[in-house]
Image (tube, rainbow, N blue to C red):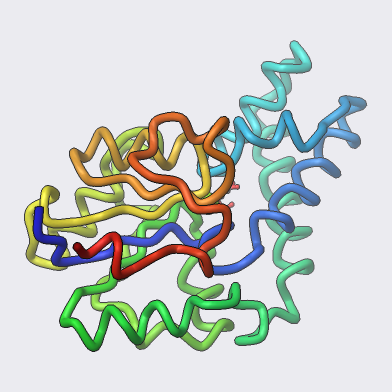
Amino acid sequence: MTVKAFIFDLDGVLTDTAEFHFIAWQATAHHLGLEFTREDNEALKGVDRVGSLQLILDKGKLTVSEEQFEQLLADKNKHYLELINDINPGNLFPGVLDCFAVLKAKGIKIGLASASKNAAFVVDKLGIADLFDFIGDAASVANSKPAPDIFLSVAQGLGLAPEDCLGVEDAVAGVSAIKAAAMYAVGIGEKSVLTQADIVFPTTGEMDVQQLLS
Ligand code: BG6
Ligand code: MG
């Protein structure tokens, strides 16, 4: 396989916003009188906003009105936006810029496949928006992760076949999405969690780009 593009997830891969999503969802759960641990959070990683709230409600065997559901989503996003208000290029994970530089030097395209509707805002704050050849739009795909849609739309946006692309993800749902898109899946995190990934590195900075390209 000759890799022509790296398609990155955002939250938890390029920056630690996954932690802010966790803090905000935990506050939502507590507001509902539910416990919410880091372990519970693994199932939410990579899952879109509506799906995440549904998982919390399902776990607590709770139902809310449509109006309450919308309010909970709005409150969570407001809290999340407050938490990320001060993020800046310093919040990029170590090694991300070096990795992008290596990819660019080798003529490998760079895509972004985030489930977050805040992705454009976040990459702007991180100062990396211009480094992407294509940024996927979570709002415009029919099915969210673990469905392959966002990864397929980014491959299309890059003008490449899915088989020419490699995906990088920290979430179980995200790795499933990459595999469903028939791409090579690089997991960031723990091998015991990201069992579907083709290869796993503990952190983005430890990702061996040369090895992945050979
Ligand atoms: C994903 C995160 O990238 O985006 C999830 O892993 C998050 O935790 C999802 O829920 C949706 O984000 P947003 O910003 O649209 O609420
Ligand atoms: Mg992620």
